[in-house]
Image 1 (cartoon, rainbow, N blue to C red):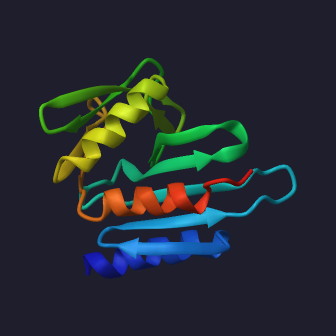
Image 2: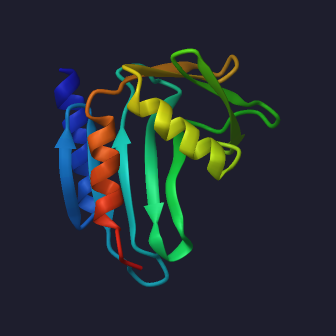
Image 3: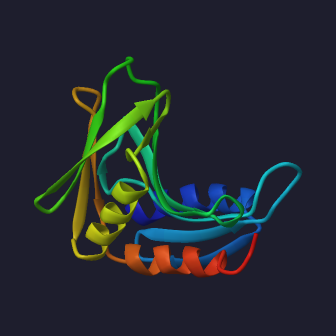
Length: 157
């Protein structure tokens, strides 16, 4: 059942993306070509393995024209109250997320890099939204999906 839900979510995402860069366990990688004012972007994406009614998915994105590499973005099911943050946990490491509307982000590019490095060396990840829900991800395939997204946008833009 879990695989079916993930497949349906990724098919819906892929319908908006021209290029599927691959499926890697619970993670997918996609490339959206430039269109109109939208830039080329590539991203690894996964929905939560458990929990997740408050959190739809997480992406690790690459936007070559803006020199963005490995940007962490969490899509929430609904906006959280102002001034409410979140915490992303990977092993013993904790990262404070900045929540704006239906999105949560890391504080800066250094934190993005630290999160991506921690994803590569852990088996699971958890996000807690301070009373607004929580979710857990399995990380098998995450590093490969992130690498596929990075390669999908390498030397482009």
